[in-house]
Image 1 (cartoon, rainbow, N blue to C red):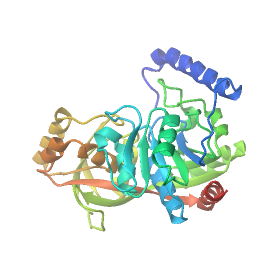
Image 2 (image 1 turned 90 degrees about the horizontal axis):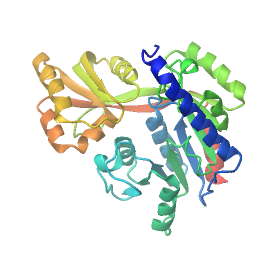
Image 3 (image 1 turned 90 degrees about the vertical axis):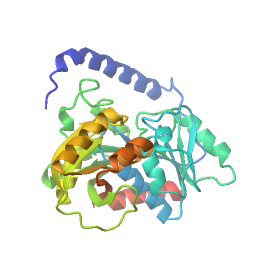
Image 4 (image 1 turned 30 degrees about the vertical axis):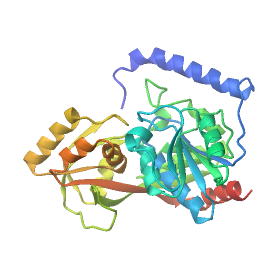
Amino acid sequence: MSNPLSPLLKPAAALYRTVVRMRNLGFEKKLFKTWKAPLPVVSIGNISAGGTGKTPLADWIINYCLSVGSEPALLSRGYGRTTKGVQLVSDGQRILLDSREAGDETSMLAARNPGIIVVVAEKRKEGVEFILKRFGTRMPSLIILDDAFQHRQIARDLDIVIINAAEPYCNARMLPEGRLREPLGNIRRAGLIVLNKITDRNAADAIACDLKKTGIPVVLAKTEAGELVPFGEDAGERNMNGIRAFAFAGIGSPEGFLGSLKEKGIQVEAHRFFRDHEPYSGDKLLPILLEAEKKGLSLVTTEKDYFRLLGEHELTATLSVLPCYYLKISTRFLEGEEILASMLNKVIFS
């Protein structure tokens, strides 16, 4: 879909492209320094803004590392958080910050993986240095950098880039006109491409064929809907088929969320979406609550939004007058899981 503001945004996009090109050239010509951490580093990132399924893939990678005896630490920027600088979200024994202080995605990954160290920092090098100093006697086996493809100040042993197969990325434009963070050709810096959120296998195979021309291995995956969990309860198998719902979320790709609810047999009779990581307030949620109550609908949101709401106790108390659920999601590989596992093993055991 074309952007009606495209003519107005083209100059800004052209300027942004130039700045990105000059910055990358600075790293390639060694004008900007890249720091090598004393631990192995795996980066997970995007070439476009939002909506690629990065968080469930990060969760899969964390769990894979743990399954082979490695103890990773997660380092994220912590988008949407109210704090600044380096912050310890979890020391691997208890979670120390709420979602407002840590960011929704980071809080979600810390809660899913309570045994790992989780740190947020705008400057990733400072975050790594904090981990090295703070956990010198309990050093993690490797560092997982979340959303760091453009963060080139730290060298990485494996650079994973995720592409959303459900979007016509070949027609994408640079920010702010489009969603590209940098030109598509820069994907050649990656060590592995994950073509994610696949809904049409034939179309995905065609995209993968083009991507493989870069010489970079390509893995095919989809973001799969899991349990629908009531607020405040643990996950578990429940028959939620036929629930009439008002869906709401602040995410990068709301269409995928609606598709996942449909897969689970949820009847979405109304929906409202906000910008990715947008803070919630009573002004935003009260109209949703009133409409859902009038129509006799349950409220359904994403797991990420659930964790964002956890930091807002008054809002969650207000919502509790209606049945509220969040949808868990995970990554399922369609092709090439063994390639990713092999590359991770090489980093972990080298």
